[in-house]
Structure formats: C-alpha cells, structure tokens
Image (cartoon, rainbow, N blue to C red):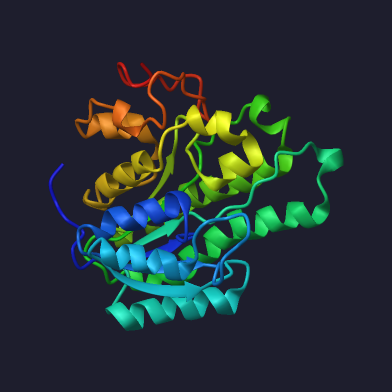
Length: 286
C-alpha cells in the first residue's frame, strides 16, 4: 500500500511504550505529528519508557512529538490534552485509543477498585477521548479513530475466566460499533484492531507469561504496520470493522509474517478474543 502520513497529527493514548509507541514510531517515520498521551512522566521501576523518552524516539524517527501527561480517567486531563494537540499542530487527524488496564482474575478475586480501574481506563477512557476528539476530526481530510480492542465475539469462554476484564475490553469495542454508525455521515472512520497472537509488551512479560510467552509472541511492529495501512485508507470506505492484524495485512498484500516473530521457530501463542471462525492467512503462523 502506498501513501504517507506526513504532516498528519495523531493523538495516541498509552504511547510511552509497547504497541502505542510502535504505532507512533511508524507514523513518525512518515513525518507525522504525534501527541504522546500517557501517565508516565518519570521512569518507572518495572516499566521502560516515559513520555519524554518516547518523544525523543519519535523525533529521531522523523516525526514531531508533543509529550503530554494524561490520565484518561480524568475529564479535564483529556479535554485539555486534546485541545493542546489541536492548538499545537493545527488539528487532529487520527486518534488511537490504546491505553488499557488488565487483570485476569475471576470474580471473587477481583477487587472492586480493580474493576473500576479497568472500566475507567478501557471503556470510559476510550469513550471520553473519542468524544473530545470528534469536533477536531470532523475538520480533518481523512479522519480515523482506532481502538485496540477485540471483535465482539459473545462467547461464554471469553467471559467466564476474567469477566471484569472482558467487559472492559468489549466496552471499547462497543464504542467502535456505536461511533462507526454515529459518525459515518461525517466521514470519520472508527475501527478496532486486535492481534491474533500475543504481542511482546511489558504487559505480557510482567502480567501474563514472562519470558517464555514473550518468545512465543510477535513484535509490536505487526500492529504498527496494520494501523499504518488502515490510516492510509479513505475513511469513508473503511469503518465499523473489527480487524485482526495479520488478516488485515494480508488484505494489503503482506505475505511474509516471519518478520514479526520474536523468536523464529517457536510456536506462536494465541491471544484472547479471536473468533474461532477467523482463519489466519496462509502460512501466517508457520
């Protein structure tokens, strides 16, 4: 797919590390403007990256960076960050709702403060960031909103093991379904993007499976390339879709998925929420 995001402005939540940073860096290589909306202002003992280290990487890659301390749970924090981004870069073209909290605990072991945190960040944060960005996106030439959230595959097996987390992630996807219809006439595309396999991020390393699962994962670059391809598409022609990373890249002509493996030869670990009927592209998992 040809095209560039040069001069486009992206507002990316959770962009200080992981998938959010990878998406930002891919756009930065085109010369895009990136608002880094994240909480980490000073180094964290267990997590790499701050909004300032992300800004340095983005500028080194060829983009313009605006590091912003943003708590997506706080309305004033979100509203002021969106306004500052539009003021600094002259508008907003793309919103990436990547910020997310996870706790894979059954109901009796899920503290209500953890339930509230996941819903405030995942569902409410996604809704609120999108809400405040809409007036700016409506003025953009090719506006996109993307949620890093799964297809709405309403099966018991996704809910029973970790009900609170699934509800919070599916809440993000419900925002896709609703906003795609609400904003279609304005030409604002709203889509979801989700990985078929686990992605080598701090969440996987620290919370899910440690080094063994990291080795069985793909790199964040597969999500960055899929998001980049999506942002280049005409917003009036692609909206309301729940995209799986490798299937969408295969639609764009990608055939070599080995480039995204952390460790070639190790079987890839499947991610949550991928529908059984969603068949991977030929040789994608080989």
